[in-house]
Length: 171
Length: 255
Image 1: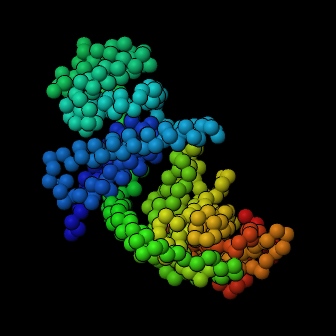
Image 2 (image 1 turned 30 degrees about the vertical axis):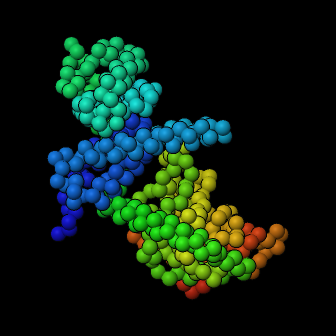
Image 3 (image 1 turned 135 degrees about the horizontal axis):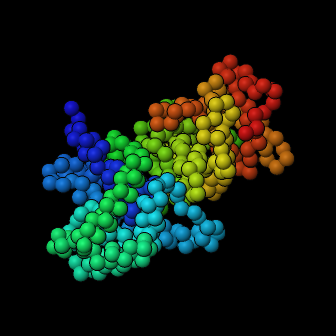
């Protein structure tokens, strides 16, 4: 039996879920897949240690989110150069209209706001934990969440999103 | 009301994430493990290279290799390379499909090159795929690798027609800033490929190139060669195992 058999199971159960989460940050399916695969590759190299963690997925998510941020920064620089030559349409991902609307609304947010929305509201991480992952103060996370919800509410025509804050998430 | 609103946002996020997760293509745990190992090797290699560079610098510097020979030689596949192939830039927002960098070795210009064939998903506006070929001289550092890809809208799974990529490769060997690479994928009936090159208006003697199997990672058969300086790709002849021309009109097969 291979030493990594449980890594295979871990990979199979976690990969799609993390791609879904990271996609909402990157807005590009291929980038999300690549970022999660890279995070998984790093996890595999440390699996002997990670397998002992309570939630190894949290480690992979943190790496993937940071990689996605790096990718976004590089892409922004690249796009700045490329747009001088031609406009580049985004990758096409077929989604139901309601989801597409949400993804489009998320796409209007700055990267730090997308990160906190996904980590807090989708991954269910408390504010303090989000702050640890992103290496910013908890207050910054809260203010980013507030601004993000306000912007999303405006985009989606759902003013009631603005006040939504998880009591559990404020810890 | 507040909790309900939050649930609504969470539900929409979760629904969208699940839709995307269903579309996700997982390269597989094995691929992740290999990628992790390769990454570790590259890190080790980079450290060794840095050490070597420091050593060479301390000794006063040494030229790494000689210029490319003028006369091309037929490629000679010598089996799968054990050394992992380094990533080659494939352009913005393009990504290799599957597990790339499987490599075979070819001998040409009196040195060995490693050749990797891979497909990339061109995410610029469509799901178009491109065939890419990458070369690296076996005795040179990974940074000297170079690649070229099909342009336009090539067939993804050619059955009979050759799919050829050719173009100028920069920075491949030292002292030869650009050379032309010719490479492509051919059907299983093809055993050898005769490549016609021209220099200006002059047609050069053809070069016969062996066809190699891409292995499990790249189902298919491929050929590749490096052209001499200033020579450009002109046409191909496809030959079977008996050396017979496979093109029905007995003329060169133009891609």
